[in-house]
Image (cartoon, rainbow, N blue to C red; front, side):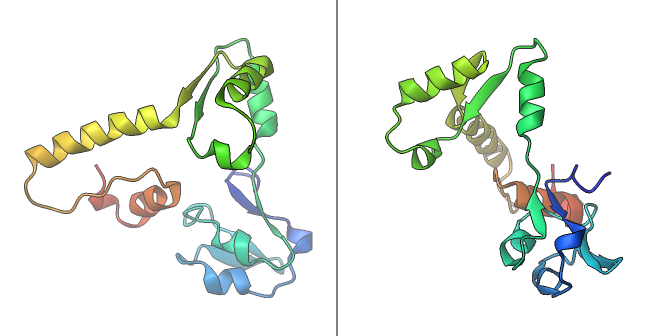
Length: 157
């Protein structure tokens, strides 16, 4: 996997070897290689801690704009799952304006992420009804999902 395929990566020439990311990574997924702190994708849970603590912005988040454009230009139907929190990032824009803008960009349709969350909640409720004992966790947080999958696989379904 190349450095920029994973959601977080290091710009090697910007790294100052301050070790802040190494000290703060909750799963110790950063190694020093060729005088820079490199993220180890197999260990990383993509929580963003290294990105937040890097004083020189050597840690970066992958930009998927090119991938999105490629997908839109592929001729396939592409839909947007829009989180309810979009409104905080685009103040003053109505739902109708947002949907129209996304359609003009080439998206076939727009749905609310909350609809998917409702489906997941219904499935979790069924699981809880069938299992009266045990610990169950349901989350859409990718870092938590990655943590469970990589560090506690016996706990996942």
